[in-house]
Length: 174
Image 1 (cartoon, helix red, strand yellow):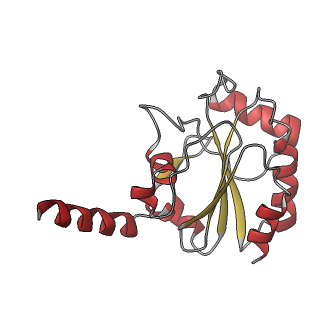
Image 2: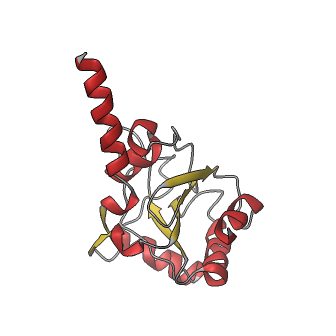
């Protein structure tokens, strides 16, 4: 009986926790509540400067310019979890993204997206018991998580999925 009660309580917890429940640090060292993104679709992307997919920064910026505004945004989370492809400091990362790709979408401080030091947001994004939707292990840099206007996880796109792939643009346009 205690197992049943525990399962029910776990289910309630995952329903009460959503994307907007988290506070993160921006690349400039400021704390930001993700509640600020209520009412917007959010594409969450773990990024890296020295990856074969780094060129996706250019298309992510174009996607942000085309669709960004009151209804949609992109948030980049630099991570050094895959072959040390994001070795720089937050300042280095910001300079790289700005100078090479003109990134203007929100960038957060470098975090861990897997393993024992996984950031709480990514723990929520990747574990079905937490997000209520799916298990979605981060397989590489530039994996994309789709968050709806209410802060719920609604989908995921692999690192190989380009920002202008129909899976992403049709979701934004819904």
